[in-house]
Length: 209
Length: 209
DNA sequence: CCTCTTCTCCACCCGCGGGTCCAGGTGCGG
DNA sequence: CCGCACCTGGACCCGCGGGTGGAGAAGAGG
Image 1 (cartoon, rainbow over the protein chains, first blue to last red):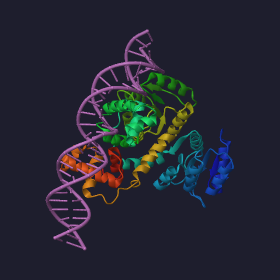
Image 2: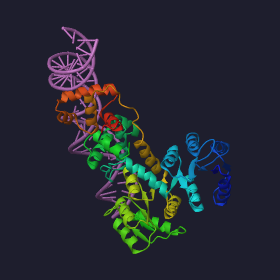
Image 3: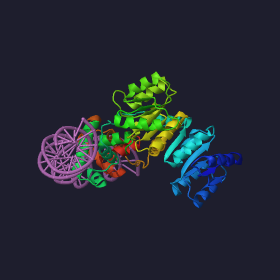
Image 4: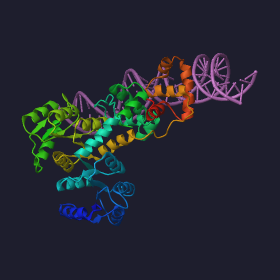
């Protein structure tokens, strides 16, 4: 992993402590974004622990570039700031975790291991903020889809939501158009969907499209 | 902690495996939400690993009650479904983590420890979906509608977006169905809309529905 | 006055959508 | 072994959706 923070008084002890943790190997310590990119280009890196406020290239921009050029690298943000712009900016740029600097050593190592495993760890206040913005944008939860839809039926519904005709769905799923119709008839009955436009709306409202 | 899942074939092995993990003590295994509430009321519990789809009382409702009556209890969701309704419902109800059932033992134990420490762990796809909804709600529509749509055409498009058939649109606007078809043909040509499902998506994306 | 736009309406055609009924194959649990 | 859920497929029917072509009325503006 790579540790990135512009303040040496933070970066050096942090790198030293993390190097002691089992299963974590600190291969580089960077003072800004360009140094991070150089370190990632130099050798295989799986995780970057990144401060947001850095000179030359800040953490968000660095995260965005990493997501584009090295999507296999997981970025965990460690910063003092937890405002909406920073949180949404970093996570929107592709960060896989977001910690504030009152996080303990245990919290940081756990977040690093989770990020390496494809999970994402957020501080509690960060998650609360994220959810607050989400719920503000979603006033109408609508009627949720019934649980007894089969995976195949959800798949078909998602494709309907993307505007595909039955023939297109059949080609995408490598099945016949007759089978697509059967799935559609079943899921319409289960979910109380009247016709195709209704299905599109439900699919979008449920996030399947 | 408490393990909650209606399927004994999932619940029992899960509880057994987790009990072996260091620092984790499974004090109860519940088959539905009421059993979870009873277990929490009986003794001090810090974490509940919860399935969403359960009889009697489902995971989301249980999470909501726990958040109200026992806010010190951290809920980690473990379910097969990762649609927006489930994710937003559970996290909005106060869940502190969200895992899908392809998560491994390591992933689950890590999420439990994180939740106990006040952090929140999300599967990667879950975080992606959460962010997608955030970013989907914030910016303007992708491809905007052309300006040369007549007011009547916009009106018709909005009603299509609400799922009405041509006959319903005609009745709502006090015009004949033939006229509705004419408007639809015109606005489809102007806006580059292929068919009705496409029109529904455009109407929603443009805020007309 | 004439033109252009917009809204209104009609007739025709046909392809896709949706309903209905039926049925074979598979994997899983009782 | 049998039942059940799920995915798969086929046949038929009919109504709505969408395309085409045409047409008349009303208002805006040159």
